[in-house]
Length: 487
Image (tube, rainbow, N blue to C red; front, side, top):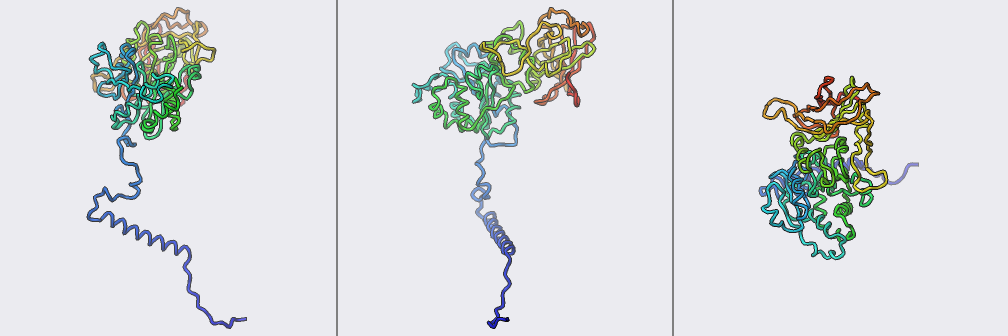
């Protein structure tokens, strides 16, 4: 039944979508007027009036991420020593320190004595640590010397010589650095975030005694600028939290961990918690770039018939030409003789009178002993036991010299490293592989490219040129072919 009431005419209603679009258009127009008012104002100096988003970005700093790659000037070294040891260990530091190029200091417990003066420019500048007796926690410290060592990073930061610094690198006075490789490895990481980069001990017991999460200071460890900046305001508070810790490295690990900085291990950093002859380790180095070595006074000289410092300087000769290949293991074969050549570039060359796959030869020969005697397992890596089996024992050759054939020439050439026989093997030929003795060989020449660095993390292959009965074998390094098998 039709309604008898008066009829009311309905107005059309706007849909929700239409209302939304109308609001967006009006808001956009208002923002446009506001923006133009700001940036076309006659008094706008572009400093006061900046976009809202830009105001939210952190203030510019010399240590912000930039597009420039990391270089040596971005690294601040914090080296620790004492008067008692510096006069003996100074040659280890001077072997790698680059005058007027490397930045940092050697921190001492007291001012240098007269016998150490005048201070040579070939050494890092010295600084004397603050007297930690002023710390209120001092009476409770288990090892005050270790606290002095750790606070060196704080004292370095407070020198306010931090322009463009991205990394602080802690190390001992007998640590040997390979700077080009260090720069390359640190360049992988963002220094504006918390990073703590180092390595464990080679020995299981040392890690067990202290910590598997600790970077050993003799090997050297790197702290990003961001982490050191945070530590600088909390180090003394952290020392009060851990007065019972007896090792500066453990203290560093704990303080960094409490800020969220956990250890990242780089395999090219080496504590060398070993004794005796470490040639087996150096002849089967991981394919990571070599960054540091340590503990030279606790091991045999790394080259035979040399004193320790002389041997270190000998290793630095190939290092000055090509650190990217230094100690990198390259394996190739002379099939007609059933020989395997294993080259540790810039250090040693081995010939085996058998065909061995890389999976075997990448394990170091256990020529060394652990830092402390203990029950097996001893080491943090797999090893091979030395053998008197003529089919397993290598002929050993050590670096004799290095020549840059490109030196003084505009043409591209090779770097030639020469390795001479260290000792006679005094074993018969391997009878099961055809009695092909390598005894006649007295030298091995290795040819590598003098142009560009080897790509980190990739192995190279090689070819052998040898005429039976001759006393020299030539090895040419090259890129591995696709799917090339080393076996």
